[in-house]
Image (cartoon, rainbow, N blue to C red; front, top):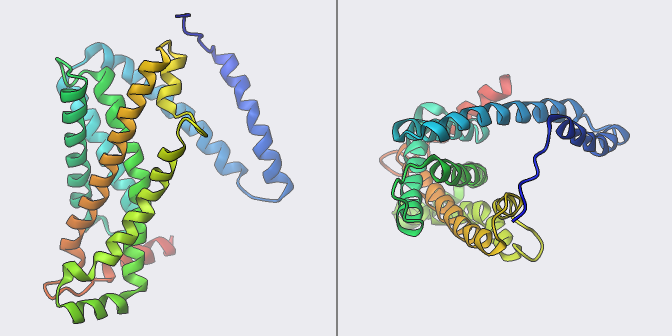
Length: 271
């Protein structure tokens, strides 16, 4: 295989000129997004370079405790991001979301790293951190969509929930339509994406491995594995997040505590 073609810092800076195209559209149509785009692109680049420096250390040191702490930090950051984006009171939802994220990662990592890749050292940073990061990153995006739909539906369709609760006398039955709606909102985009991979899109992991010198057949096998892992991880995460959150958002009679969501929204609106 050919050697990997590196990109020097000036070539990378030259690549930022591509931003001229979206910026031109924003300017022409008077869409005030230029500042947000520039700030977030710069932030992304700085964060990734800092992560690269840290990962160089992690990959060299390759200590199970250090690697595990890094993963726990990723889970915590993801939890705080979810509560902020879905507008929830962190006091009640940090623990449920953390347990959901940790459980999904434990299941995926044990299965993929231990049983599929059969690593002698399961905490090997080269595999442990990238695979965990991909699962957590996708779970974050889909969790935000699913949980937002779940809590919004319960808030806006409170009468429907009360009707179902009154007629069934069972909270678990009454919330099923809302859980189904949340699951569909969270997972349908991923299912649709899986159906066109290879035909319309070439996923990032596979492309990265090929650019890194791996044979296409090997890259494809890794991509299939990681797509299954991401889908399963996201599914476990969203369902556990909802199930564990239900312990806080309903009282002993099955009534929905709407104030837990509205309280945080009011605080955000004041800002």
